[in-house]
Image 1 (cartoon, helix red, strand yellow):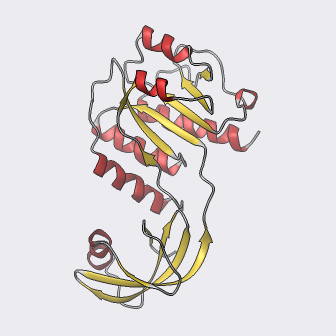
Image 2: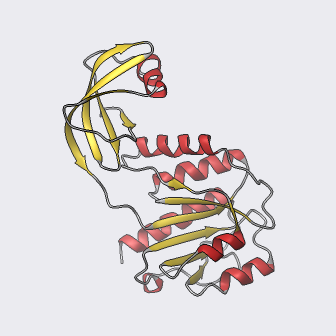
Length: 236
């Protein structure tokens, strides 16, 4: 299988293009490819088989030979996640991307200890996960927002799936209605405060659900919740 690299710019068949410094380093110093090597370049418009036509240590030029995949319909599942420490947060970004979410919304709640997210690092992680999981478009990462602002900005086209440790209700296909998007909300390690939980449950399109009788870490909860929603959404 050829190396896949995300190319955000528009691609025209039979045209040529210089690759970014990051991709040039990866091709020349990490993978040690040669002139004539075939790689795949992709974006949300599709995927192209491409040939390296020029290569030195700080410049790689490719020719887009032929389109081998068309664009893909975006998953309507989004993730709203309260920020956690660096390592589990990076796992969350990677696994959420692999599982196909279209958007990641970093949230600050009353009990959120971490207030910042390295946006450049986050984008790099989701792009690499997109390349490795044969998807066409990395998820959009929104700016950090407070929980109250997140709830205020939700509209009637979004169904909020609240992973609630206090709920005993299981998620089922019957609870999925014809919404434009499904947004999974995962709380902080210490859970939402009682007042925050009340605000969440007052949202008209909220569906609280349980995933496990055990208390899950945030990264485990994200993987479990997205996998569950993917399964129900794809296999009614």
